[in-house]
Image (cartoon, rainbow, N blue to C red; front, side):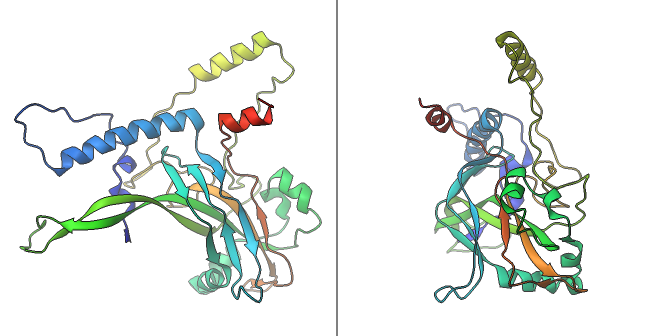
Length: 304
């Protein structure tokens, strides 16, 4: 099973809403059927994006798992769950997944002599966390830590190979092609550089309307104005990259459709190259992410 390239998904190209038209006797090829699928996937994704936005629909809680007698490797664990990415695609992780932290740290330390870790080291950590996290962990926040963000992104993989005509400039009698494309996911833990008080690197949250105490007429008028101003065209990225423009939670040339899950604080010793302070706990902020509660959950919380 192989992961397809990012740009192979037609939804990354932000194609126009065109669907194939058929007529008796028309010759069809594989592209026509691919375009049919792309149209319906694109319309569904567009609807989901405007109905719910992008973020966590259910699950995907991130936790730190220290080494134990039965767990030789320190891990960052992501619970099963479902998210909507910034193109409106469903990203489902059907079972828990783990990232080996020691292996990740060694890989980062080997890049440019540890310069990536140096740039991702900060003090005064409370400014880079959610209010709920700070309230719960204010006494545990270390003096310095490397800050990394965990993302989940949509990925697709080819499965079910079947015989087919050969494609390309070569002749073959035993050519095969994938008969199915499976929706999958990919986790990315990335150190965050260039954070400051003006750029926290967290998902942009909607501004509070401040209308909790307003009367029904004022709230209705504000809602109407919000809906009338809410439509936005698909945001194409700069340059020649496919997909969607990056948000405040993304960095550099990364995939702008990736969903931000959590911020990881890795306590370090103030050396020239950051060294893990293994006696201090790894802290994870799950609460700065965008949450998309379903109508069923909202109704349950209201006792309906």
